Image (tube, rainbow, N blue to C red; front, side, top):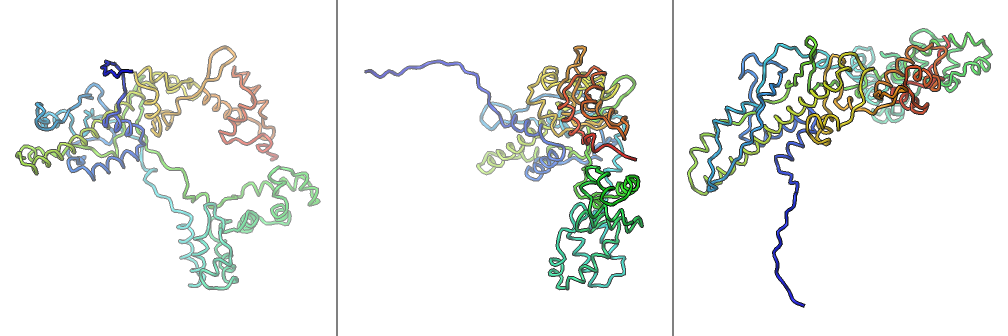
Length: 479
């Protein structure tokens, strides 16, 4: 056996994730809030990066439109000494990229009002504490009352026992129970109850609707009330079905979760990433730059770079500045690319879903990521990232960009319809039904067939649950 040393030439293709590409991908998938956090973090760590004040440019608008013809895809390479290349051209950078690397065309288009977004609602604890401070309770009762209010869950129910509260304030249980009854008189009616029965009983008492039959139904027949078994209630209470239905109509007007109006987990307001306005017969796309820091490189470091000599310490200083400069320019260009990509994807969505924008949700077309990816010449994974946690405000409402991608359901005539359009059709059918004779899932299937939509009953049930629509047995009303 002999050993040989050979050289082979081999050509391979390999995908390398450069730091620039990694940062661009990371920024692309961030939500608006996460992007602001990432920018602020870089601002705090990079001395070359600074935020440009909005008053630096007179008459700058809150929402500005990207002039896509002026967006530059230029890349600038920063090199070290001794490599034969010129130093970084600061003048060219400042001229080409400006504050964000994007040229904006100022428009007089106004964004939707943010009044509701800026409004802060009081919490349940705030609302009850305000009433507690205005009440005529003594100091001990107010202290115990504060403990009761602090131990309410999000629905307004007392989550601690009377003994636990008594132990916290070193008072007897009778004092806690007396204070609890007084707190239960506060608004909203039914608050601070220990269970559903007590909540409903307190409400009918405060609203002066109490009666022996109402009390009996709440205390003994909540299960029959849930299943609408009114005949069983009438039989056990030895009364007529009409009397039961009249009592139930009162109960239906009560709130089983009195604290939910002040729930801390209430829906959060969404600030859209992009606006779509209809101007004449065309649609205009406007990126929302409100709240995003306007970035630029600190021009002071231009003088530092030019004044550095060739010593070791000065060379290290120059290398550090170049490294920070490169990080700053990468961030600016990554944000530029992110905004440009959102613009292009939105533009493509308008082209594919023009009927939706013109006529409404019933005309939403089935569409997959590949459709947009092919149109804008990007990978599907890029489209997935750019549409996640990004929202668009349109004349039809506020939607997540992912909303426009949905599966198709075949019509009987061979065409297809978007699943979201089918859900909207089901919602309209249920909304127009006779409340005393609601449609069951099989009947909804037949009504959809009349409109050329053929789907299985289990699919109707699935869509109904996604829409939060109860089964027909629980939608039925007797009055």
